[in-house]
Image 1 (cartoon, rainbow, N blue to C red):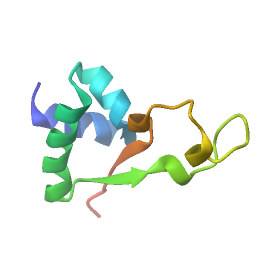
Image 2 (cartoon, rainbow, N blue to C red):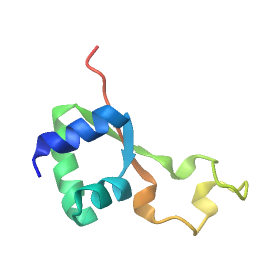
Image 3 (cartoon, one colour):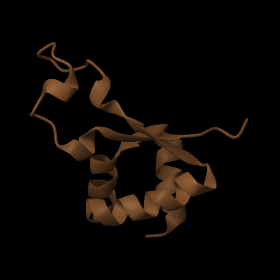
Image 4 (cartoon, rainbow, N blue to C red):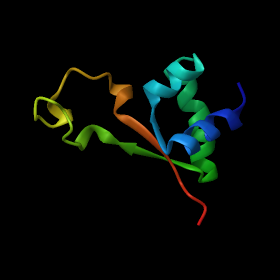
Length: 82
């Protein structure tokens, strides 16, 4: 896997969670975080904490929910070069 594969994946999808990225590329979440930090430093992607959103089916805020894995809350978005 190349670093460019990660950036292309996020660019094509617009956003991806840490959990999705780790599963897609078949690597541990900690290893994926290190690779993502490279692109964050380059200014190509940004980390958005989704734990404050209210998109649970139960109507609760995600920060009050224990159903999701913490890595599902770490969302990485592509920063367009406009």
